[in-house]
Image 1 (tube, rainbow, N blue to C red):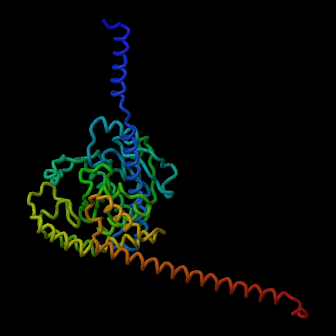
Image 2: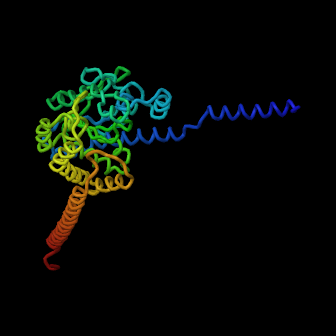
Length: 383
């Protein structure tokens, strides 16, 4: 008969192992949630910087706020209760709309993590839901979070600011702050690190564009975030893109669901054959998306960055086999983007050389002026 002490020791070890399993280390999930949250904040901040910087290149403009608000309602894909609890713990987000980034132009009294409840007297709503028809054919969830109500409030406030009415925030603690806005490109470019359709580029008229989450998550540098934001901005604020969007509204419903240059039509029922969809997609890509690449290159350069940022991003996406709608460049677009980046670099070199010549001429003129003044100050006999 086994020693009772031995049996008890074995049982204790088993219970200890069970307890360790029950207390599974979720460090991977913690790091994933933290990293993706940081990626999204960087992207949304870049979208505001791009809106300001690209204002001169945009056909449609408005006033843009110097802050970013986020809540769990901005997450397009729903997490289960356990993951959501950990996400809230790691990121500090909850059901309220909180400040996660603020430009130096924001009021000093506006701090990170402050809760904003109203903008221009309109309450920021809780997130709604959206029907994702494409999920039916992927076997995924057909319902996703939708922050359309939030953007309705913010875009109205931007429009009122453009008309001369100051943007006013009401905070969760009852304070009211007046915010000074800055003119920038119209519309909003967003991306959710948690998205039911992470490979899809989505557009709603000239008001909102969703960049594929896969592209945003893969972005590594500030320039790449800016390039993605500028790419999306082109589809809203360029007259050429706006005209093409209006034209594309006449194409079949199948192409209009979750694809570039098309309005989202929840519940649309007709599907195209693969050949028809490919033909329509080729027309859209040839006419618009290549121009968006070059627009994004120029905006990044205007912000002091590298014109080849988008090219590097798309090459990395290709190398890793990541699926990304619209943002991924085909061979022709990559060739055009590379040539464009080279032309920009050549212009920058020429501009730098011209600036150096101007500085040298200015120094020569200053030296000559100093000598002239000194000669005038000398006594006549010493001249």
